[in-house]
Image (cartoon, rainbow, N blue to C red; front, side, top):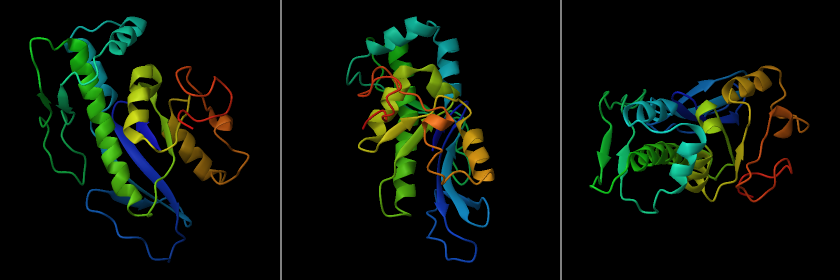
Length: 220
């Protein structure tokens, strides 16, 4: 699951009963045991929706539909690149607070270009971490995407979809995606086939290949 709220994280739940050997853990990831049957491997980041909030405040960006419309006009290859680590790394990363960067600024750069670069930077972080996680299982995995920041921006959802391609990406409408997953794990329902994405608040987007409510992922 990829969660983007104030901060962001990517996690993979694996069935590895207690006592069985665990796959090697890359140094950039963490792992903990959820119960006697499962472990979670992942990576967490200090930046997420807090970057969106910072940019809106400091760059005096518009709200709601006006901001989404402005993002739609961001030029492909606008040239701005961002390192989103304004708050530094979370363990086991070691970058200190103040590690964020913006590059490629010109007199043509707009405030919305800067926001788009920051959002793209978070997508890159997540995509890179997911690739490392997948190295522990030897295959690409499907992605469940959610969180309050994701729910707030269609543009960001599409950016994630592009960054995570060619994986299948599902979006969960309930912004409390981590709590939902933890609840299903606690109830022993995470592997129950009747608990599909609709059952936990799955939602499609009108900009995806499927029409709303037709039960297809964002990029089938």
